[in-house]
Structure formats: C-alpha cells, structure tokens
Length: 93
Figure 1 (cartoon, rainbow, N blue to C red):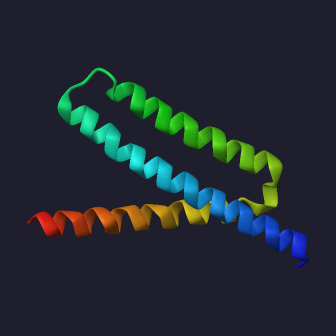
Figure 2 (figure 1 turned 120 degrees about the horizontal axis):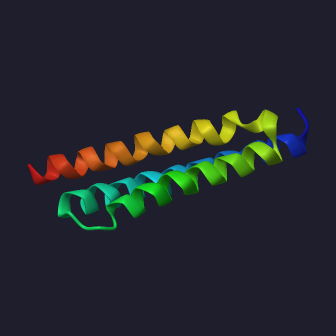
C-alpha cells in the first residue's frame, strides 16, 4: 500500500469518527427534544440523518474502496459516546 493511500485512509477514518461524534451527540439533543415535547424534535431527527447520509455519500463518491475506514470509525464513535453516557448515568445514580 502506498503512502498516499494510507494518508487517505487516515483522513477518511478521522472524518468518519468526527461525523460519528457529531451524529451521536445530535442524537442526545434529538431525544431531549422528544422528551421535552418541543416541535423541533422532528427537525433534529431529519437533520441528523440527512447530514450523516450526505457526508457518507460524499465520502463514498470520493473514494469508494476506502469506505470501510469512515464507516468503521463512525461506529467507534458510537461506542465512545455510549460509554461516556453510561459513565455519566452511573455518576448520577
């Protein structure tokens, strides 16, 4: 594997991780909006899904064979956010 390909994999992985952090942080806001009964809960939901889908679509169009890097790091971000939320919940209990 050449250095430019490795660099692209790293860039795609970082982009996927950042997208995952943003997506799952927005999920917290979406849930809070649902629980509060506000009217913008659906807007948060649509914006979160559309934004994530658009970024992943662009990453696929830019480098199709490199898609596992952003998708994998997106899921790693989910684990990071879930563990952080669980730790916060345990602290409150």
